[in-house]
Length: 104
View (spheres, rainbow, N blue to C red):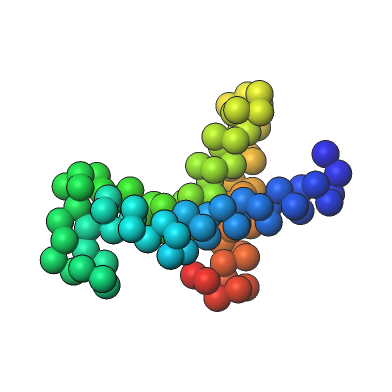
């Protein structure tokens, strides 16, 4: 894999983390699973204890980035340890890009 491909992969991973965790496209699903939010603070979560935890993990670009890189690497045929390394790389790049763009 060339340096350009790695760069595009990391940018695509950050884009997916933003779409799932912070965009208005996924907001109704996040509100349904996690409950509350600014639109309806009295709403109860769909899954009482797991929903808010799941939403906090999805809305964190670094947390979501680790699992995103780990799962995609396993799907691509990597072994466990290289998948962990890819997950850490995507997590770190998501955190850095999120801080640089002021999205987190």
